[in-house]
Image (cartoon, rainbow, N blue to C red; front, side, top):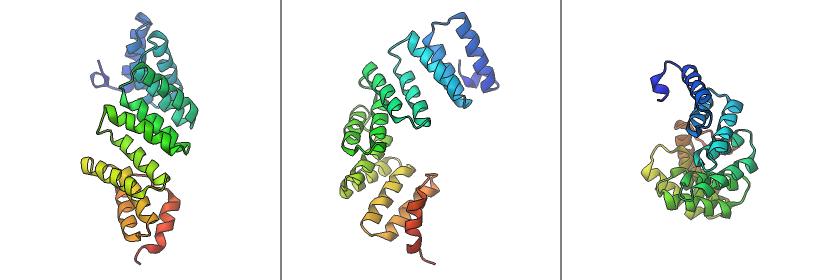
Length: 210
């Protein structure tokens, strides 16, 4: 059963708690409870549910990924990295933890490591657009503008509404001094819901036509 079978998320959570009371060692129930609690924005409750999930099934890769996501919410990059490493060890061909590790490396300024991990994600899912965005950002960080642009354009070709790719194209254009292209792409990113760095917008502001 899923949330669609219940009138509210609270009703679904109550159902899962009852199922767990009757079968406390069912990892799937603990995992589903964690996901439901995330939907209810109960981060600590979700964390406890996912931890209980992996206690009952130590190779439940998705639960480690979710725990990593909770760490990211707390800006605990090392915790996020460790949980995603656990997920990858549980299932080597699971692209999500590799993409998540790539993102953490990027946040830590380790562009080359970010590319290595993101490439592993793409090995198992060639269309994983989040991994492509991380690679584009990493190439930009390394000053490899042509490579960054190439990856972003490839992402947009497959996913025209993927906002981070437009932001990356805008960064590349600004670095080249092409303000018109930078403004065009950053505006598209904003239109698609991307939260662009205010400092980036401020840098472009003087180059907009009155």
